[in-house]
Image (cartoon, rainbow, N blue to C red):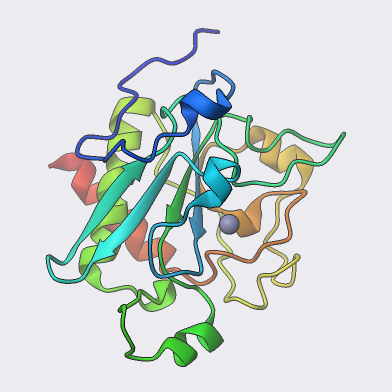
Length: 212
Ligand SMILES: [Zn+2]
């Protein structure tokens, strides 16, 4: 199978937090996107890139848009998933990973309130933020053939932790998966992000962006 076909840099993404030269990564042909939330309010350092995704989306509330930072090529494995010995592959199983800056945790959302810096509570993301993610998904669909579909269950955090919402994929399902899912769907992982993001709306926006 050929690898690394299609454009490797998301247009407009900053590459001044680039970790591929330090960590290398496996060459892949991406067929899935995994969404995370950072549970913070600014671009993380990812321990110098040791647990970085392919891309991070940082909200710019003034401009009402997402600022994208790319850390690895699209078709190169990144590092934000747990991968246990044995079982299935995770980071290297043809996934492009995106960290959305903000939270999926209602308690953290309440604690941060209207304080500065402002934050996105992803289950109630503003339309401009959801559309920003959707445009990226449309680009992944057009240039990397990632299907605009995904799991039916997106339970809210903290129920989504472990497999509290019954949402996590079996090894078999994960190995066959093509499309868009969350960290909370990936086996060998226990994190519950991105919780109850409005996945149906996100896909609708992505499908309409793919037709523009
Ligand atoms: Zn995550």
